[in-house]
Length: 288
Image (cartoon, rainbow, N blue to C red):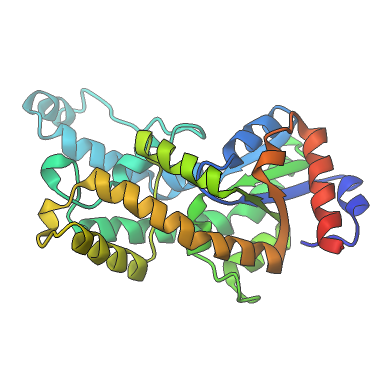
């Protein structure tokens, strides 16, 4: 969805935008702010963690609870109920399920199990992104929202090919929404790595990239046995490697399909009207 002019977007009776970029760059903050300005907020990660991976997450909770005899007896007798309390702002249930590969005694997962869960996430993310047009219409017909924001995870770029104009996921998104890249700086990237170490987010690696970085991390740290890998150490190192690998692909996606705003400019936006102005400026920049 590319516009012939900024006015076409500004004066449209209904607007739909999909935001993408690095995890933690401000997509969810923007979406929450727009929700307060009467925009419908669709969170791809929330959809993944509820509709498509909810059972996996809850079953994992139950497996852990069954290790405690007191809780196991209560579960078997249906005396207690375990559920996931995932929200737009709190994706910890999804993060805890996806986990990090490494030493099980330090909270890590065997690499093979981690890869299995990664594939579950890939399938779920593709499905959640294909749901966007349905929710655009649902928001309008069911709830009366004319404006729509799709808040995607940083891993969107891993399930699409930004150079393929026939990519099915991108065809779905671009057919129903305007794609907007929130572009950070090197300073933003360093801050995101610091924040990731404090509060990890759900991470998805393509299979080949994961195998490559797993071997590279072990070599750098003189580790021969997978069980000796520190999950937290690999998680932070892998996040930084993945972040820098994604940046040129985010830009290619914006070049081929959409628009760009700087994260620093977005941070100054206070409401829906100011976001529309910022989006209009991005449209004018692309036209030039």
